[in-house]
Each structure stands twice: as structure tokens, then as C-alpha cells.
Amino acid sequence: MKTAKPVLFVLAALALLVVMAATTALMALPARAAPLAAAAVEPEVLRWAFLAAAAASALSAAAAGYAVAQVGSAAVGAVAEKPELFGRMLILVGLAEGIAIYGLIVAVLIFNRVGA
Image 1 (cartoon, helix red, strand yellow):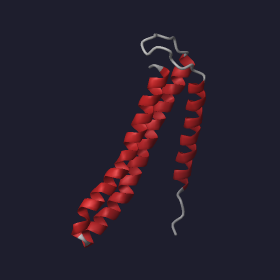
Image 2 (tube, helix red, strand yellow; image 1 turned 135 degrees about the horizontal axis):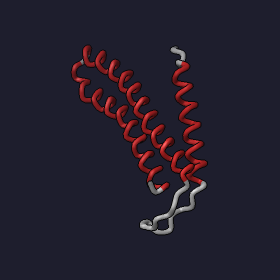
Image 3 (cartoon, one colour; image 1 turned 180 degrees about the horizontal axis):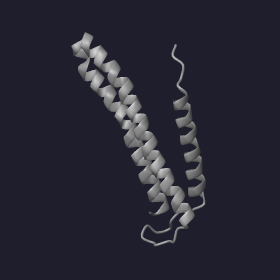
Image 4 (tube, one colour; image 1 turned 90 degrees about the vertical axis):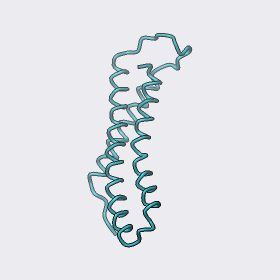
């Protein structure tokens, strides 16, 4: 059995810290009453929101790259032996790429909540 690499633990700890910081910053904001109301947002909250959105995008893109590398190399090996598995392997690589989309959605939700 393979042992987990320490880099993955560091990335997971960093992601947890960013999520906790973003949650704390967003809980300080009141829910917007009207969607078009121009409410002044504190600069400190905006800084944390931008940092959280950037981290969500960057970490999910890095995780997607790692997942595609692992799944892609396994898929190439499997397709080399059984070419009829190409469609299934393509779906698995596409699912690994979906991780980056989830990070982008989280970043958009953070910006929506802050009003940036």
C-alpha cells in the first residue's frame, strides 16, 4: 500500500485554514436585503473574500491537475491493453477535471455573498 505524500497533507491543511477563514469572514457580513442595494463592505472582509476565492480556485485547480495526472496515466495504461475501455476512461478523466469547476463555483459564491 502506498503511503500518502506529505505535500497532500500540507495542501489539505491549507485548504482547511482558508475555508475556516472565509467562513469567519462571511459570517461577519449580514445577508443582503435587496440584491441591488449598494452596501459598503469593510476592506478587511473584502481582502479575506478575495483570498478565499483565489485559494479555492487555485487549490481546486492544483487538485484537478494532480487527479488528471493520476487518472490519465492509469487510463493510458488500461487503454493500451484494452482499447474498448477508451470511452470509460475518458469519462473518468472528465470527472477528475470537474474538481476545478467546483472550485470556480465556490469562488463565484464567495463573491456573490460579499457583493464584490
